[in-house]
Each structure stands twice: as C-alpha cells, then as structure tokens.
Amino acid sequence: MLDINYIRKNKQAVVKAALQKNLKVDIDKLLELDEEIKDIKTKLNHYQEERNLLAKKNKSGKPSREDVQKGRDLKEKIAQLEDDLRDKETAFERIMVKVPTIPSKDTPVGRDDSENVEIYRWKEPAKFDFKPKSYIELGRDLDLLDLERGVKVSGYRGYYVKNEGVLLQMGLMMYALRKLIQKGFMPMIPPTLVREFVLFGSGYFAGKDFDPKVDEIYKIENFDKEADGTVKKESKFLIGTAEPSLLAYYADEVLAGNDLPKKICGFSQCYRSEIGSYGKDTKGIYRVHEFMKVEQVCLCHADVKEANKMHEEMVDISKELHEDLDLPYRQLQICTGDMSPGKYKMFDMEVWIPSRKGYGESGSASNFLDWQSRRLNVRYKDKQGEKKYVYMLNNTALPSARILIAVLENYQQKDGSILVPEVLKEYVGKDVIKPKTK
Image: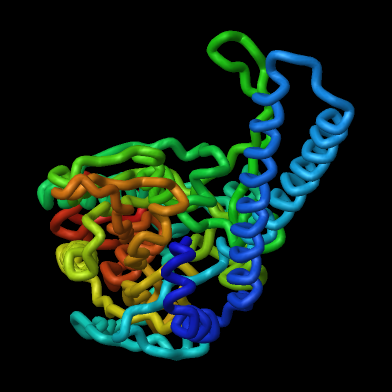
C-alpha cells in the first residue's frame, strides 16, 4: 500500500505503473474519495464540538426546549456523517489496496511473462549419450516417488517422496538453511496456519479480502478453543511460502534503526491451491498443492540503494546454491506485466530440466519497498527519532519439488542410477542411488 500523499504528488506515475502492470485502478476516484473523507471529518469535528459546547452549557441546569432539539439535530447529523464516513472509507480502502508500487527504472516494460528478460546464464545443459528418463520414470524405477498412491490418499496433485528421495529432499533443505545461516540469516520455522491479516499484509490477496476465485490460498474454517476455554470461530489460511509469516513477525512493532537490516530465513511446508494453473503440468510433481521451501526475507532502512543491495545479495545466494548443486540455471528480470502490484523490482531463477527441454522456475526474488510494511505496520525509528516504514524484500533459497526434479534428471546415469551431488552426500549417506534389488 502506498502513502496517499505520495499518490497525490505522483498521480501520473502511479497511473502509468497501473497500466504497465495490467491493473484496473481508478486513481481519480481514489483521490476524490480522499477529499470527501477529509470533508466529512471536518464536518464531524465541527458538529462534535458543537455538541460538546451544548453539553457543557447545560451541565448544571435543565436544557431549554431549543437546546434539546438542537441536541437531537446534532446527534442525527453526526450519526449520518459517521455512516457516510464508513462507506467512503470502505470504498477508499478497496481501491487503495490495489494501487501499485511504481517499478524501478530498469524494470523491463512488457505485457506478460513472454517479455521477461534473461540477464544471466550459468553452465550449458549436459548432453546425454543415452536416452534420458524423466524424473517420473526415475522416481518410479528407483522407488523414490509414488504418484499413484499420492493421488489415492491426497487427491489431484498428491504425491509421496520415498527412500533416498526423502534424504535428497531434506538434504536440499538443510543445505540451504546452513548456507543462509553462514550468510548471517536468522533461521526460523514459522507458522504455516495464519490469520487473515498476515496474507493481506504481505499482498497475497488480490484485494482487501480473500477471494476464493482468484487467490491461490487454502482457507481453513474451524472453531478454536482459546486459552481461557472460550470457543472462537476465526478463518485461518495455509501459507504458500514462509514469506508472509516471517514478515508478519514484526507486525505493529517499531524497530530500532540500529538493528536493521534484519535478515531471516524460514523453512516451511507450503500450500497452494493452484486454481489459476488448471490443466497445466497435470502429471508429476512440477506443479503441486504442497511442497517444502527455504525462504529468505530482509527488512532494511527506507533507502532504495540499501534495498537494491540486499536484493542482489539474496539473489547471489540463490545463484550460489544452484552452482553448489552444479545445476545449469538462468536469471530473468521480470517485466512490468508479470509483476504483482506491490513489487518494485523482481528477478526469477530458472533451473534446467531435461524432460521439459527447457528451464523451470526455481525461485523468485522481490523488492517491495514499503508496500508490505505499510499494510503490516512495521516501522523503525531513525537517528533523528522519526518513525519510518521499513523496506521489505523476499527471495526463494530452494524449493523442494522442482530442485529435486532437476537433481534427479541432471544427475542420471546410463544404467538408470543417479549420482548424488557432492554437497548432498553427507545427507543421503551414499554416492549413488541405484535401482533396488529384488
């Protein structure tokens, strides 16, 4: 969410940003509502002062008939204005939550993901001297994946990871965590079941409220028993990444400027309904409802240079992890039309997947400036004692399913076995994963 004063001063730039991000946002209506709200508040203050003066006048005696009528009139006017104010503020908020951050000057202008720009590539894909198998075939033949029973138990997109596949997957997560801790990130295992404000605050709702038609989020409706024994019904949601929980950790708090930047990494199970991807990647584990991921977030001072530096630092860690695994990858800079409203700048990482004959997304890194922190109300006190909203950034370290796919396919051998990447051997406990002997 942006500051209304900023929007007022930069109206044309905000309108342009909305067009570039393919968003329908009525900025004129927003500013009109802002003026109407200010006008209503001025009138409210005037009538409330009149009512207070009237009450003070009649405090020690019986009010006259005229004063009684005047009091009634004031009460009606105040009640009507309060109703109008609620309606105007609701309308204002519904537009305000969709107002985008103006993208960075070096963000490519484009309509959709077809106009994202490749800016870096590492290692050319290997050329096999045999017909390579897909990860689905490898997972079946080596007894590492069970998709049929996964669907039986969990439904569409369900799956089991088995045997050395488990050690590979958990090894990937642990290796990423250890790397991030070495880089100065504080590790956390955050809640995966969260309250509504967490997902609104981090921008995972398309609007002000959860919309099951467009928001790829699982909603849980249940009755919770509080500590005092009272029963409370509150909708909760399953996170699609650790980012929302990590960012909300400091919600409604004022941090010390000297404590910034705060660098946090979180391991979590992730849940996504994938409603917008119906019909895509219907087999296997490339696109699933649940997976594991290690996420990075950073909270820094309200300084674009500092935020850009942190952004690059987090992306460099993702690159390093891909290179440690010796997996070919590329980095994309995301264009305006493929960025969500709050993002100032965004990069994607894509890893080479032989069976797709191309690259598949293995992470994304986003700089939101203060768009998220205004929603979550996370501020810091600078050297002059002024309170400012922190800048928030996030980045995928490693996701389980797609990196597991890349490891299985890129490390396969002619005899059907899979070499274990050097950095994962200590977690898997062997150098090669071979077919099971019957």
